[in-house]
Image 1 (cartoon, one colour):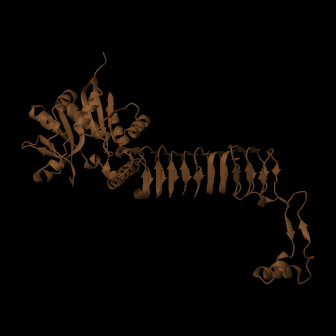
Image 2: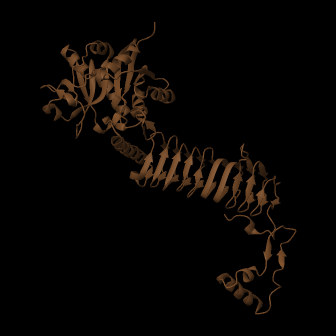
Image 3: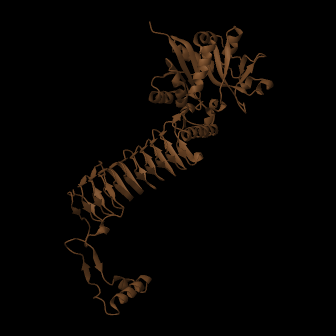
Length: 508
């Protein structure tokens, strides 16, 4: 026979969330790296429950798909008609008939709930041998929340929904957080006795406490140390408030661990991100997804990193990166865009107005400015000239370009893939490289320059340009007649465009 399950978690995620005014189910709205539902499941994870059941309803297919992605161990159970929380829990328990021991019930919209609080609730419940325990909190404003009503001895008398509460009960500030621990056998029995005699005509799970108390069963209240973590949300205004609260909690945690956050109010870090000691995060920085920032790295200001790794001592300034790797002591920005599979090795540089995609840039190599590097491999200690484009797409397929180590490519180059530039090779400024360049060679692929002398004086007479040219000609010749006008002067045939010099490769 199967072994009984000693702990079961039930998450209530069937509600529509009408006030969110969204086609997305409320529990799937994102909040710093997880959905509301994802945060709740993470809070319950340390319980190591034998079974996790998620009650779905509105947008059931979307919620099921999300569970398959983030929590394949969870069992979705459909509540086709939302007839109340008691009805939802009964459906959930029907799906786990062998459940025994403790069942923990959590609303799906409490993303700030801490795992430590859930564990403390269960420990208090099981330690007291209670039939049911509710998590409560003292809040400044209890409007809209169920109230905890105690008897003269301070014990739980009942839990009252606000719409069913008397004026005296509405004045109470101790609220029901929507998180409970039950003995599953006694819960099953009480669920069968629930009525719909209330303002909403629904089966309230909270009525179980009154039924158990009337039957002489022990019921208890466990108070959360911080009411903030029990907050839920019903609309986007409340969701934004929770996002700010979680931002502050996350930022404080990182600062206390040795990370410098220069402006915590404009720094947003997903709960899935990792940051090592002595990293510096400047203002307007967003770290999202599986991003990891190494020790001593400087990120920001004005940086967004998504699923990106930043190595120890690297610098990323005013840039955007998705699915990229920035190596130790590498530099990025300002105004760079690293697209997926961009990989910078140690001390590599991607500079101003540079975009990379599926590109590996070797140790010490530089792409300083105004360039696109896509589907490419660049070796070590090479320099890519300004305004360079790696032409990777032929209209049907993408092709790869390889630049060797210690290469120097000229400004305004086009590398038409597939093409390879060998180690130590140079390419002249303004070249369109369509064939491989051997190691150590200089590639020149540009039109021949032709100067038409006197053109401005003839075609633009009377303009400031013509006047300036005339003064320069007179100064250069000492007033003597210049060379005959209109004679074309060609560059050296040997160099095809004039002598090659340092200006033919980009500045660093």
